Image 1 (cartoon, rainbow, N blue to C red):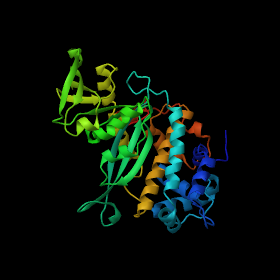
Image 2 (cartoon, helix red, strand yellow):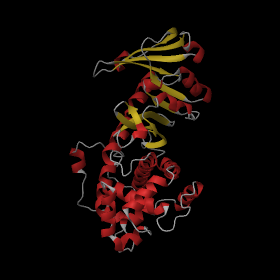
Image 3 (tube, rainbow, N blue to C red):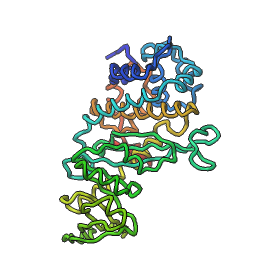
Image 4 (cartoon, rainbow, N blue to C red):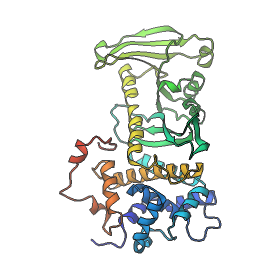
Length: 389
């Protein structure tokens, strides 16, 4: 069935525009703006993400070549690289950060019942960070080491659907454990973290909030065993203990019992020691929860492969954060599209198809409805996949 809307426009129709306007109004994004609005900026940057544009000049050339269709894409202002550069430089990045959280709320509902490999009727999060390297001469504000610049993307990933629910973009010097100071634990939820987040004073806040954590113990942890529980050694479990901390500082920081689980991977022979404040779940489920933490590593690798967060269109802190947050918005938008249209393709495949069809005036569902198309290429590919259940 013919349509007057481009595929790009139909995709952007999924955006809650009234919420976007609220975000713009909150930070006065369109103050004294006559032609190139925040929505124009967002659409241009989203186009660049979806079509893998390399630079501002590249964005300008492609959009001007399709000038007759820009109106149907929702872009009302004149596209010029200097205008887009100024917008990225000066318009508050928090507009797009707030809007990303609006999309996170939508995606969370859609993926609430997704399976992540562990039979547990609770919300499970994985907390981790990834470092995005920058050139020190171009990004001096992001100095990380003597001859290196970087920013960090701290992410709390909901393992049901790999939806990032909490993102903080900081300079590369911020230690991961400091993120626990701004994280608000949800009662009854599980938080999976590596041992870089082990700070017992901060972890005790999870206990007081009614939330659960699973992490790995650091070496030379001082503790006293209270109880030992029976384990099935054929599963790789070696011990399941109730302990109390006896270190000078740790005993004060975490004054209640903990659970210590020793597990040896049957395949690799590598040993792991886990700490958790959950005293009821079977020990093997605690192990499975920590194994599921790999999904956040997969998320970071996938994002770095398929979204524009390695090459930046601007060098200021505001421009970098604007691009990162719009990248997150695009990721969430495609995830929402996949779920609402019940698409069986992987996220990688959806992005590849969209990159070639954005200017087509075809119903968007028809774009993904080719009976001759298969996912054989993706199955044989080395590319990382998400949402391929």
